[in-house]
Length: 152
Image (tube, rainbow, N blue to C red):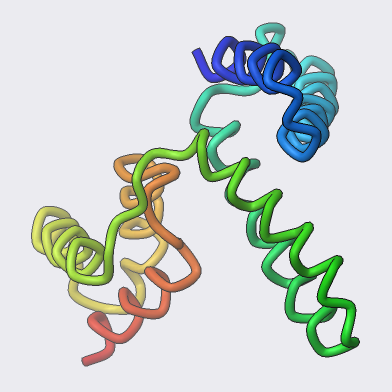
């Protein structure tokens, strides 16, 4: 499903002559091909799943956000702008991101659903959140909130 969307997006970007979108989708497809090859060596002949693709896209966005900070600190605003444009292209393939209130509600529901009571349950809670909300929340932030709630 995601593979098809990416291929179609590449064709569409090429037709509409969106240079940044073409370059970014090609980067995504190259990263996907690398991950598929690695997965095949582990016995996953169909390559990585859509959830893993979403995770890969989130990693790509995280890398670009880190690069933006470095470029802005170094006064390279044109490179920071390029990274921002790439983020916008990558985000087209992600589901709508949950806002802070939705993330908090999802965490509360997962904690009560699993009966999580202490930090020992952190791994179980995070695994459940990743399974249910892949591509929809920032798990680094969510992890901090889960830890707070389990400690507090």
